[in-house]
Length: 290
Image (cartoon, rainbow, N blue to C red; front, side, top):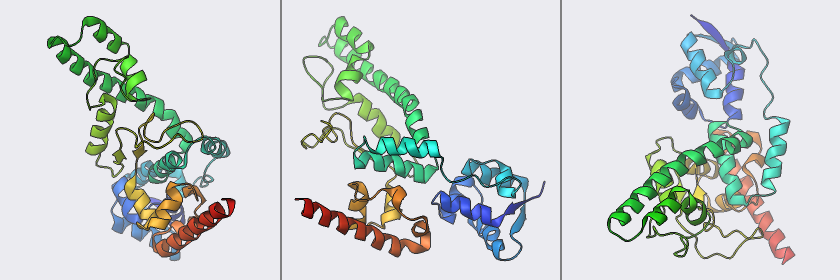
């Protein structure tokens, strides 16, 4: 059944999500040409008649009720105060690299940082259980070879290995028997990232690089494996400019601090220049403080 979509609402939702027309087409299954047709109507009629299936797909991509796109209900404000407070509190506790991962996921998928944190528990449980299966298979093989006994297998089944040896530290010969170069938990995550066709796959380092502990006593990539996600999203924002990338990666500026108008596809040069300025300002501040 035909219905109408408000052109300006569609464009504002797309820009709010920091998506290009190509990205919206990919996420919704609606052709880029159709999206262009709807948005271009803002200069003429302000609305376009579309099939009900098109409205349904676009609404699902944005995670909003269809009535928002038709203009029957007002466009909700961007962000929500509670989520913004949550993100601010999190930012005060996380290192810049980790916070950037959260913000890249938020930019790519439209989920708030709070939602991402809440679902992390479920994802952790899923992958930890898969890692236990991988680890148990390794332990059973060592058991058949006579290199471990049933007591070791029982300890592994309690989750001690994943909890104490694989996520929060390097394997300790004194506390776990199934060692070797492979880390079962990291192995499962790497496999999941590598099989992802969404562009979210990143690089997950197995262990640390010997860097000294930071202010929180954490060793980057050591106690918690360092994960880099949504690399294509970061490359889109920085255009692979090293200064712009450094500014975001090391916290000279947050992704959410970039002015919304600079996130448009046709403002890439201005966006990179803005990030470069922030990077240089942070360098000058660091030198002055030293």
